[in-house]
Image (cartoon, rainbow, N blue to C red):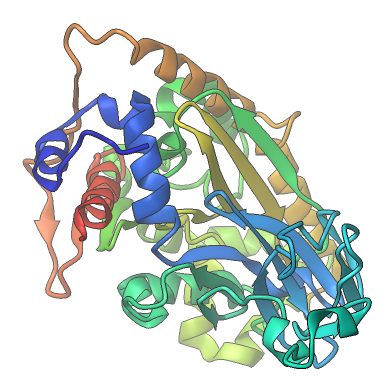
Length: 428
């Protein structure tokens, strides 16, 4: 399907302070998003810690195209197209598992978990020129790993992963370095949310918690000691909190809670020391990173709250992957990351914090899914199709590295994501 939109049309749809609702509702635009964003740019496929053992795999998609992320018998993590080289059937039939070989059950072609074709039944039938070496699983055209995060692109050329991440890379460091060894485990399962709304609604909005999550904020105000709760008298989303929004370029954005958290770090550490083995965790961080960096990382609390465009977000303890299914259908996968080299009680605390807000019984995530669906419903009213995204535009500043900064409730993040969207949609 060819969208009736040109590059100049996209520039009209996304303007400085407003955006046309068609980018959330038009199936033709969604088709172009699949082609221009999800089938071209760098996407996060997962984290190599999901695959601790040789043969571990997870089948998923890049856009609409089926892939499998697998740790081969040689220990290397790779991303292959989940497609037999003979007649095109998927060769990995379950979402997760462990396998030395992937077998196509159509005609019995067998592939090693490192990619090469192991066996094609009746090879004589293919003639003397048939060479198994020519028919291994097809790798994703470009693959790269940063701090264990596995990225892949279906485009054979384009910016490097380092160029794509830019200033956002250091926030992946923040997430990983909440562990004194700089390593995590991603083996605690996954929470899934599927909602009837557009994929671009998800995450990085510091304006809505006062209304959508009011009961949660009220509970935080009544709780002593948490490094989110203590920010500006229990309200990390107040404009006066000192917290910020950041547009990091290329669509990457950040809800920056570090200013408020660092201001209350000593109180947070005092509370953490009261947790079982909390003192041991703090001591291990200082031993690994030194005083200055350890205090910085402890203030972050392993929660950079960063969005890596277009499909990865690190929020709380979770690795969040966004999977667009249709213009009005989105699945969100939330994998809790557990820290290596810490007492078990610290990871238990991380899991309880995750469960308290996210997942089917969480206090916040179900509300988000509900409002996304109501948002999609409201956008069907097209008499006045423009959406106003100017909050904080009058006070936004640009830092020397080119990043844009606003207050925590400003729509700097939404504008940043849309600039990333427009850039990718406008590329030839």
